[in-house]
Image (cartoon, rainbow, N blue to C red; front, side):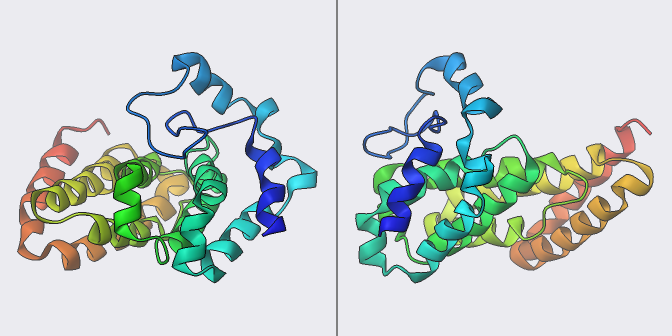
Length: 222
């Protein structure tokens, strides 16, 4: 796995503040406080965006789509940190690359491993936050990965709350805060498609969300 080892220095200067740099387990609070968060998004520290690192996200995706679950778990410390760093980047197109890597990762990383490392909620929250941004052009495919992850890692009330978070941030906030005019047209089209998907997931439960969406739109500024 020499290719994966080559990725380490590309992400070393911008470690994710919510991951332990030694164990890759989730932290209860950001390491280093606000200063670490500022360093995380500092472009000068993001070597993975430099020309000599071009395509590093493709190496990550290749690894997640080719490694067996056992191999993946053994090398999770090489794969998970850069994946989450990509997913929480300040630039939407880098977030999209991180989500693509995650789509391969969750097909081979067991829910038990995610829960043991404490990263299941961290990943769900990252996807929900990405959906809340509504950039133009919009990021496609985020919802399907989020639903897949929720189905893998939650049940009962926890699943209901995770899906509600997607509705609130991805649909309700989108209708309220999406760009206006021509710039927002593609965003609104994606939100409508995501709503159709959520109708299939929530079934009759979508009714209460339609009421919420209607009231939000009624009081939102024009």
